Structures are given as C-alpha cells and as structure tokens.
Amino acid sequence: MLDDATKERLAADIASEDVVLFMKGTPVFPQCGFSAAVVGVLTHLGVPFRGINVLEDDAVREGIKAYSDWPTIPQLYVKREFVGGCDIIREMYETGELTEMFQTHGIDAKPGA
Amino acid sequence: MAMQASEIETLIMAAFPDATVKIEDLRGDGDHYACSVVSKAFIGKTRVQQHQMVYQALGGRMGGELHALALQTAPPQAN
Image (cartoon, rainbow over all chains, first blue to last red; front, side, top):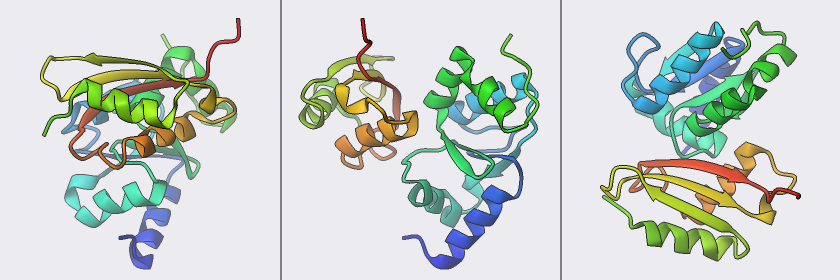
C-alpha cells in the first residue's frame, strides 16, 4: 500500500508550501469538477497554493488516499494539516470558516465575496 | 458502476442508527448523489472525522463504485 519512500515523498510535498492541493489536473487545467471547485475557491480568496497533479503518478494518486485515510481527490493541506476534500472546503467557504482558518495560519485570504 | 440510494442509506443507518439521512440522486443516473447525515455520533468530531466515519460506514465504496457523493454531516442542532 503505502511504502516508506512514497510516504516520505508525500510528507515532503505536503510541507513544500503553506497550502498544497492534491488534485486531478493542474490549477490552470483541472481535469475533474471537484478539483476545479476547490481551485475556484482558493483562487477567489487569492490564496497562493501549489497544485499537485495526482494523474501524473499512480503512486501519489493511491498513496495520498492511504496517507490521509481519505478516499477521494482533491485533498487540501494547510501548514501540513489535512483540511478536507471538496465538500468540506465548499462548506467552510460558505460559512466563512475557510477564510478564518487561513487568517489564523497567517495566510492572506480575502473574505468571501 | 452505480449504487442505489436505498443501499447507501441502509449502510449509513446501520452505522448510525440515530441518524437522519437525506439522499438526493442529483442526475437520476444512480451515480451522482448528495447526501446529508445528522447524527449524535458526530458530536465533538471535526468535519474530516465526521466524513471519515461515513466513508467507513460505506465500507470502501467511496472513491470506487461510488464516485460522486457530495457529503454533508452535522451533529443534531441544539434547539
């Protein structure tokens, strides 16, 4: 399932930026509606993030699901912490919790318009 | 592969007997569902934990035969 090398690599990816999104496709060209929705929210809030395209590597695609015990992509990590998938991000955005969470972590986010 | 809404509901109710479950077949194709689950089991849990509990109840089908299940979970509202 999740070998040590993959685990280390995922941990390094997650730590590589404050905000990291494991997604299908790229931020410019998402290849799944759920990934596109999270990209849309982050872009709307003006939060810089690194998108990691899981479609490029099956080890990452399957590995990240085991890593976080979460069965689907996208997955958003903020300061190494798993925040959620598409549904949670959307819900947090709508309630304003997402903006708050970014600000708590010292990440600039425009309040939801 | 598709799953019946009733099948999803049965699995969730088995894991959360007190739950109020609402399932909507978004496109009528048995493949894109929106589901809300309200249960006391979610009290004190983070959203991630709540969703993980539901995914566990679905026994690994999420992300497999069940591709699109928009999930919303909450503990009962205190009135």
